Image 1 (tube, rainbow, N blue to C red):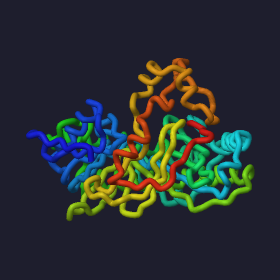
Image 2 (tube, rainbow, N blue to C red):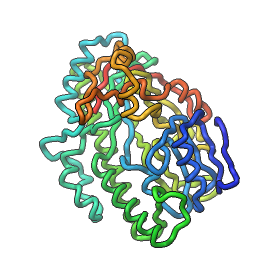
Image 3 (cartoon, rainbow, N blue to C red):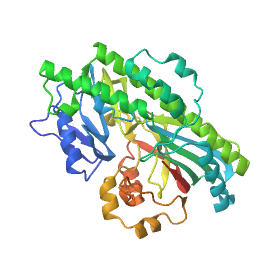
Image 4 (cartoon, rainbow, N blue to C red):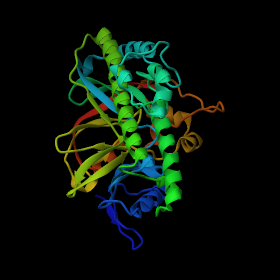
Length: 390
């Protein structure tokens, strides 16, 4: 842990593994620390940066409430990784390009969806909640698609000598619609109750209320959707890799980092909200990705109670997308991607070069890992060979 902040006006301390931390993220953490229903403390992971309402890379435990913005808009966003038996020293650039070509044919990225509805038995057990029912038709074509932003598909070389496959994706439109619906509801209810919260972006729903029950059910359905979506994409990824490398695979690691769950911490059952944070219970295997040009890590949790048994979900942003495009140069970003097969830099909606996902837009992954060695133990280090971005 880097530091503890505990001013007189805070109800609970802030315990941070992130130092330095940007002013906006600290202001949001301070607002969290003033909430009357928080349990023990606010925990900030080393990848922490400003989000909406609650910092990304933040973990809180709440007594008898859920906060939609403390989960975020991409409910169930997460990682899946699998080790192949392909020897890393035997894979070359042509292999990587062939696999990436097959991925582009099999997995829609960005705003693209499947032309045909995808199969999943979870569609038959969708909750009878309006926001879910309204999205079911489009979700059938979104299942197994990557999305955009920081989502990616990556071929990697491990320090264990093998080729690894990894991808990062979420719940597509389900997460956004659920988050908006129930945050708006929470704001209305908190205004009606004259609730003691420092910021309406931290509006909450009391456990036991109809709205909280619906949110939790909808959230859990989005988690299931996101998990299945990653499984289907990884199945396509594995098929592509097998056709080029003739490899077989280990058991996939499939985890999420935007969710809330009822857990027991410091002797009390509480709703732990992890927004851009991963479970790191003792022995639990996790994934901490870097940026598209830097290493990622397979890790083992140490079960540190001070972080509510959590760790970072990635490197974390050093600057926003717009700031990255303003401050970084294409030449420097190209140099940072040396040796990695990737598509050229895209453009934003105004036609400008978008460098928002370049390595320079993210924190140094080695510093992030070093800051949380009391939370996790690194197992395998993975270097990118080829990257597909949303």
